[in-house]
Length: 139
Image 1: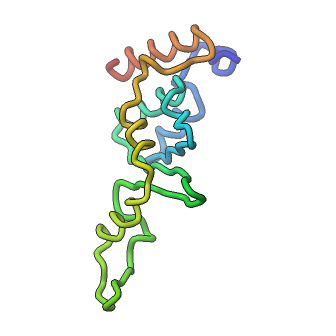
Image 2 (image 1 turned 45 degrees about the horizontal axis):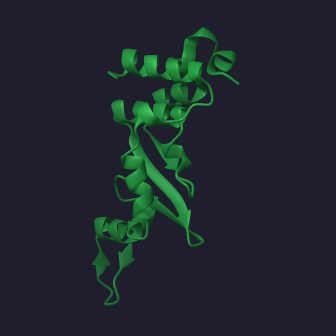
């Protein structure tokens, strides 16, 4: 399926994801074991939208049968912790400890995503996304 078949002449700016992001304060990026999200053109477009619009981004993955989430601010789960002596643990410290187990190589791949090298199943789709990014998001 080509983007034009699904979205008509409006291209990526008519996608449900783009329209949803216009209303959202942020997004959750799920990274699979192979970090495929960092290699796909459409996912790259979505990441450009998130970054250029200053949206909050949480990143989640699973490794060693455990879920991991990196958040820009402390999450509700980070509040109300105490150390072994019963002293309150600041939410930022709990956040840092919670995020410590996130597989660093997956974050690294995400941070080094290049739209220019992303894969598209159809060359026309690639061209449409590249044109949209150049014209509407400053290349």
